Image 1 (cartoon, helix red, strand yellow):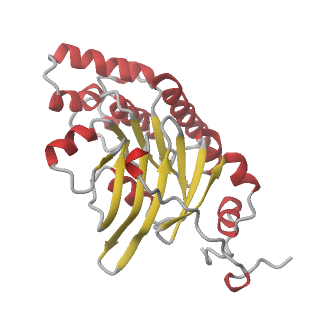
Image 2: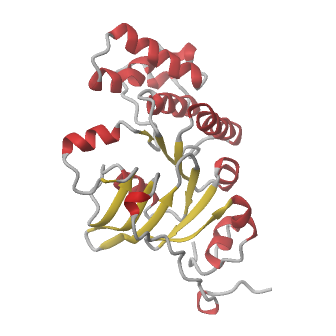
Image 3: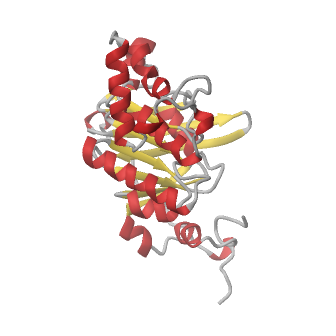
Amino acid sequence: METPRHTDVTIPPPPNLRLDDPASHPGIAIQGVSKSFGPKQVLDECDLLVNKGETLVIIGRSGEGKSVLLKNLVRLLEPDAGEIWVQGQEIVGMAEPELMELRKKFGFLFQGAALFDSMTICENVGLMLKEHTDWPDERIMERACECLSLVGLIDANDKLPSELSGGMKKRAGLARAIVMQPEYILYDEPTTGLDPITSDAINDLILKLQRELGVTSIVVTHDMPSAFKVGDRIAMLSKGRIVFTGSVEEVQQTDHPLVRQFIEGRAEGPLGVF
């Protein structure tokens, strides 16, 4: 059967994720957030709800704004418009001292792990504690080693990032993300560039950290096996807005044309030709 072209497909309306009272949501409520870079509109009145204690996976094509959404969430980028509520606090426009305190609730695993080349792995992991606590060095190193043990890297604590494989760097980045005992962990493409076996090990770590630490997680990924394994819910971002949310089972069974094209990896369809 011929693959439907864009003009042959009716796209369902996006889900209603706008709350009358976002301050009452116990997790994260992103409401009407927009972000542009010059003439390019990346996020367009984007709405998203993240429930406390869940792992929400965000999927979508490259360049659709998934990483931008994560960075707006902790105000590493400033939204042009909209509201972001975290545990009843509106963070857009929040003063810097209060924002710095709120950021301590978040751990962030960047795409490339973002380790400092001149510092050992243990020093990388302990850096946030050194900057934001008055702990003595001995206690900081003890906590850093504890986090490295959680991700299976205790034997690498004195190594430099250049001595680690890609998967080990991701795990070191994870150890750093949890060192402040965050309530939320943001994962930006945690399996990108890794072989399937290492990717699955990272997926197991994501599940382990949610189970043992009770964190709320947001995972940005193109990796559908990873999304299906770690996600409680999956949201799809397209043209700057969330166009679908559902459980793993609902995503696997949906006939939503944008989602179907993406998870099947078809080159042609309503998302356009890749």
